[in-house]
Each structure stands twice: as C-alpha cells, then as structure tokens.
Image (cartoon, rainbow, N blue to C red; front, side, top):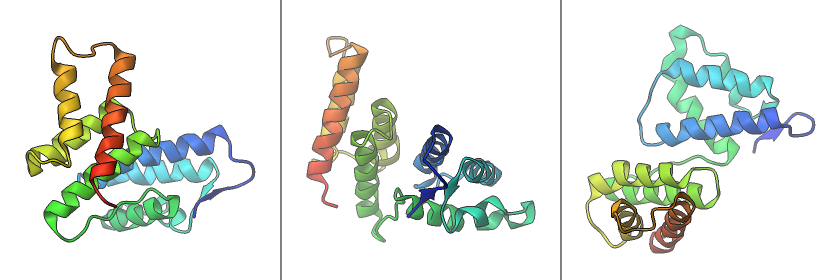
Length: 171
C-alpha cells in the first residue's frame, strides 16, 4: 500500500490525484505517451509518495519505456486504485464501467467525466443492457432540453446513476 513520507501533504495528494487521472485513461489500454507517466512518477516521488514500484517507474530511461505499462499497473495496484479486467471481453467491459462508477461515487472522478468514460469506453462497445441503463438513461436525460439542466443537479443526477450502476454490476 502506498504511503507518503512524513505527514501527507497537499503535494502528495495532488500527485496521487494526477496518477489516478492518468489511470482513468490507461486502464482500458488507451496508452498515451509513456514518458508522461514517467514524469508523473517523478513528480509523485518528489511530493513524497512512496510505493515499491514508483521509483522503478520514475527511473525508466527512454530506451526502457516499453516497461511503462506493466510498472504503471503495479503502481496503480500499490496505490489502491488498480484495475485488472476479467479475461472475458464483455465481462471486462462491465467491470470497467463498474470501476468508473466507483471512481465517481468515491469522488475521485468527476461525474461528467465518468459518464463520458462509461458511454464511450463501455456502452458504445457493449450496447444497450440493463447493467449500463442507469448511466445511459442519465446522460440521455441530461441531453434532453427539458432535463435537469442545472449543473449541480446534473452532477447529482450522474452520481446517483453511478451508484445505481454499482448496484447492478457485481464486483
């Protein structure tokens, strides 16, 4: 499990938030620039975040960037927000939707961003199903000109949809 050196400060918390944000893009194999993760790992170390694999990730050279995906997944696990999908593709899609919803409910992922990730990365690939219906229906309602409309209500609406999605998809 991750720990911060000394008292956990705003710098360490910000660094973990940055790594979590990168994880939202990387968990589904949407790998961007590996050097971006190495740089984020360096910032996390400087901020006092400490996990067994973080120094390994931060110390990678350009010629070693092929090691980034595995090391980053280890760091995600060590920080407690890792995601490993089941072998079955469709069950993996549902597990990914569940993870995004848990991130929304936990306050680590903006409800708008979480809804977008569920729709784009799961619902569009998986299609209509009862498990995803809460989020799909919430997004449709918000797109309706007569829907909730107010930003605070919309965020609450999406967070409730994420809670319902969690109830429908077993962990």
